[in-house]
Image (cartoon, rainbow over all chains, first blue to last red; front, top):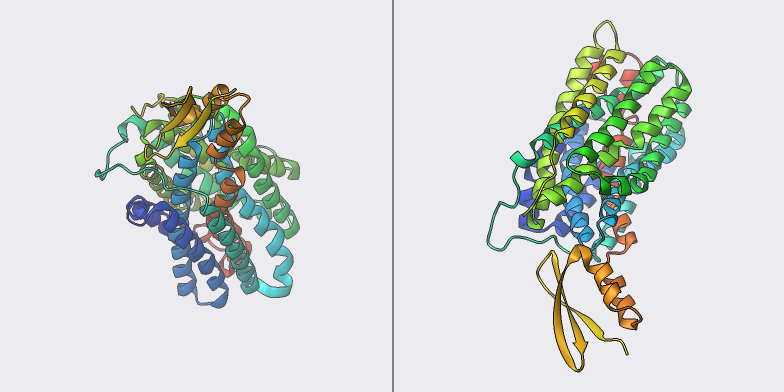
Amino acid sequence: MNAANAAGYLAGALVAALTARWAGDRLLFAVSLLLTAITVAASGLTADFTLLLALRLAAGFMGALVFISGAGLVAAAATEASKNRAPTLLGIYFCGAGMGIIASALAVPSLLETVGWRGGWLVLGGLGLAGAALGCFALRHTREPARAMGRVGGGWSPRAMAHNLLAYGLFGAGYIAYATFIIAYLRSEEGFSAASVSLFWSILGLTSVAAAFLWGPILARLTGGLGTAATISVVMVGAAVPLLWSRPGAAYLSAILFGGSFLSVVAAVTAFARKAARPHAWTAVIAAFTVVFGLGQCVGPILSGALSDGPSGIRSGLWLSVGLLAAGSIVAVFQGEPSAE
Amino acid sequence: MSDRFERIPSNLHDLIIIRREHSGFWLPHIVRASTEFSLVKGLMRGSEVTSLEARGALTPMWVVVGLAMGPAVALGLARFGTRCYCPPCVQILVGTSQKQAP
């Protein structure tokens, strides 16, 4: 299920820039956002595994289109902001994922006993449609990112941002391994109940929202790949904490550190992309970063899963996550300050 | 009396053109979008037009929050939120292969 979603996400990232150029970021954002919500709701209407896989694939595909086109719109909106405000705006956009996590953590577990798993999907779909309506309303007050007149490509150089691209791929592999296995780890190794898992998930979502405001001014001051390195470092510490201390408090500290930084990595990379490329290339650059991230997301769970099936269990898979994040952080340090000129 | 300023619609993405009325003449000014707020504010201190122009130049925060519904739905709900609720996900809780984890 996760692999299907990740594969869909990667496919969506691959076609996002071209689709945005053809349809425009605003139309792409609106259509794919509505379809994502509908796909989630539709998952509650079937118990067929193949159909569920197809829906997860579609949700991943649409999700990438939403994410990239929306990031392009916010990056364009941020051009009007001051140097310090721009990373905060991007952070607020990306912390939307945290809002979704909070909403799902609060809404669904309490309803599962009464409405069942199908009802859970439908509730998530309903929340998604409400969010999509709000997103489409806000869309009326945005404008299309600038497009190069008569040019198809250009405006950025993959070589100039190679370290950050590699770091982002390693982050994609490392963070998803944690996100995939941490719940199973807390359940099996720490004896977490469903309520404790829900609390853990809520803390993670809540801190990811708060972090947008904390990281914004910091990222505005950091040059080159230091913003990426700093945020990935905190994610790494968050992933390592529950492995070093086997206590419930450590798990919640992990949720605070991980939640308080994993979406800020995306904001840091996007802030970097804005500096490294001309405005007409922003959507393409964000898509390129998302492709690398998507590749990492596909590889991460496979590697961690293989390790977790070994004698050391889930713990070794989570340690791999820590290692990947450490590698990503180190690689990002070597990224120089870009110039779009 | 303060000079009057107006923003001229332009397709230039990272530059903003404003015009300033001075002694009966309209003089063009071109500024970078990233510096617009402080520059306009500095030039048009005390003018009623100033605050309106400066405020209108910035995308309201609620619009960005509205756009954040994109990641909220695409990632928060559709990706992370569903992680523990789909039926195959339950398998991990009863001991299936970790490679098949949700």
